[in-house]
Amino acid sequence: MVKDSIITFLWSISPLGEAKVGIPYGLAHDLNKYYVFVLCFIANILVFPLMMFFLEKVNVYLMRWKFYKKIAIKLALRAKYGSKEKIKKYGYFGLIFFVGLPFPGTGVYVGTMATYILGLDRQKAFWANAVGIFFSCVFMWVGTLLGKDLINLILS
Image (cartoon, rainbow, N blue to C red; front, side, top):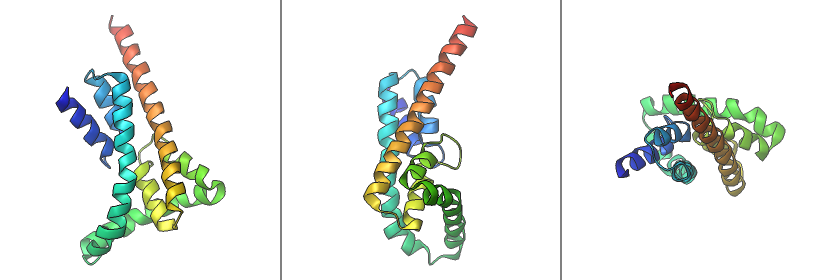
């Protein structure tokens, strides 16, 4: 259980999966369904302050290297153009929507980069990201539970 909890947490805090992968992983490994939701939600929430620290402190230092700078600019442009219109049109509700979509290329990492790049109010952006994360976690949690029940029904 401890090993699966750690892996679930790491998937949920990872830019490769976020809770979109952490929740199905945790539920597939028979962790308590409520525990999985809370664990993945908390892990995903932690991304915002960690990413803001990275962008403000570490990113500035790493921008000196051409290899890193090229990748960082590409990701920044993707975050800016992927979310700018939604945020411009709908404000922080656009950020909630963008982060809450449980699709690849959306989520708290891109939402945090958009916050940084667009110079949004940090506290409001944190809460918008948190609400978006909550909705994303709910979608993934319910979808995974329904899918798991459907598979069990078919196999029995």
